[in-house]
Amino acid sequence: MNALSNKPDLEAFWMPFTANRQFKAAPRLLSSAEGMYYQSDDGASVIDGTAGLWCVNAGHGRESIAQAVARQASTLDFAPTFQMGHPIAFDFATRLAEIAPEGVDRVFFVNSGSEAADTALKMALAYQRVIGQGTRTRLIGRERGYHGVGFGGMSVGGIVGNRRAFGTQLPYVDHIRHTHDLERNAFTKGLPAHGAELADDLERLVGLHGADTIAAVIVEPMAGSTGVLLPPKGYLERLRAICDKHGILLIFDEVITGFGRLGTPFASQYFGVTPDLFTTAKGITNGTVPMGAVFASRKVHDTVVEGGPEGAIEFAHGYTYSGHPLACAAGLATLDIYAQEGLLTRAAEITDYWQDSVHQLRDCPFVIDVRSIGLVAGIELSSRPGAPGARAYEIFVDAFESGLLVRTTGDIIALSPPLIAEKSHVDEILTKLRDCLKRAK
Image 1 (cartoon, rainbow, N blue to C red):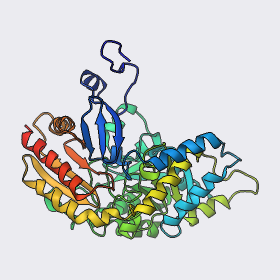
Image 2 (image 1 turned 90 degrees about the vertical axis):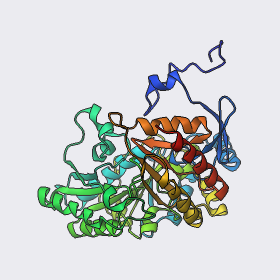
Image 3 (image 1 turned 30 degrees about the horizontal axis):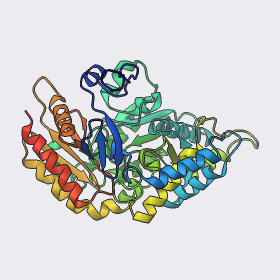
Image 4 (image 1 turned 30 degrees about the vertical axis):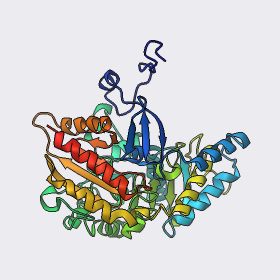
């Protein structure tokens, strides 16, 4: 702590995805949280419009999760899962499988969404090799996609700013077109009407590279980090059909959409499209302990696990903290809350009120689009000439100073409040944001 100001010394922490010099000149510090609200270090109440970082789905300060983690820490603080095991990891995997899409119920634990993405890509490559399709080494992502910051996820990701500084990435990667179409789909509630044909861009890459070179396609069913881009009606179904036609595995990145964000446990259930693999993290422990998981179809799992010699390690991959006892304890307690309070379907109950309310922002200054699904919304602003992103960032700062936490990416404001949000919380979030938009320059 700084003895003169009673503030923490900010210099040692190199902050992630942050303009460090700008932040440390005028820091925004959160000191506690409960329910729908943070408290800043100066005692101000800040309503959470983003579920932390898309992860605190059950709201903050859940005592049952804290107690479960404390009990676990005093019982079994760590146990390896390489050639060993501990019961709580198997219990948690079983509970997760019970809410998974049918047939996609084999669970591999990791520590983050980034690790989940890289793990799923390696699973796809391993599967293709085991079935005798070793030439299938190409991975296909999508423009504006986000799959974490590992070299695999970064390579298939399509956000230029996340890739530019890091030189050569994975070879044999390509990208299909994104689905954002302001001209035809602006101010859409739910799925846009236009753009299903964009899935056909995968056929273009099949023609360019050959289906026998492509292992998998990875997409977010709803692209969150790039600014809440929604799949057009029929798009995911079309993508699934093309993958099936050419023997390509389909991977969904559900790090954001998993655990109730759209009103179903997973987005694949909302859309009625089942992937071969899907990634999760964030809401899996309500953000309390870092954890992620890849859900694999039985087809993929059984092929890889049964495809090697007896006694051999079938999938040479994993992490020291895969299935960590404390994370599993937090996850089990989180699933209990989701079940007891109906939070995995809660978004479906409030979505009409949420969407009607958020779309009232369309008449605010600089707003060029509002798009929404489940308990998520993106508000896109016109960019200030010569300063893209500056307007949204200024609104982000103004919102925090006004007692509201939002997310911005470029000139898009993203909202994704905890699933415990009531109508009064929706009103508070959107009233504060409307005032900020009116003050914007």
